[in-house]
Length: 90
Image 1 (cartoon, rainbow, N blue to C red):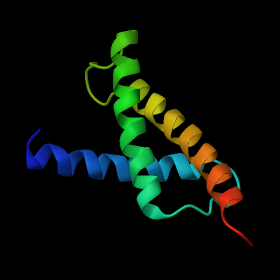
Image 2 (cartoon, rainbow, N blue to C red):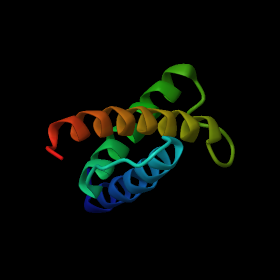
Image 3 (tube, one colour):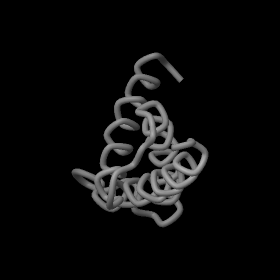
C-alpha cells in the first residue's frame, strides 16, 4: 500500500467513524483515535461484505457499500463506547 492509499484510508476511516458515531444515540465517551480505528476497520469490512454481495462496484457513488460501512462503524462505536465506559472509573 502506498502513502496516498494509507492517507486515503485514514480520511475515509475518520468519515466512516464520525458517521458511525452520529448514528449511535447518546454520548459516546471514546477517544478520537478509537473512532478512527473503528472507522478504518468498518470501511475495510464493509468493502469486503459489499464485494461478497456484488454491490461494491457500481456506477457513481457506491451508496450500498457506504451504508454497510456506516452500519459496521455504528456497531463498533456502540461496542467500544460500552466497553470503554465500563472500564473508566467515574
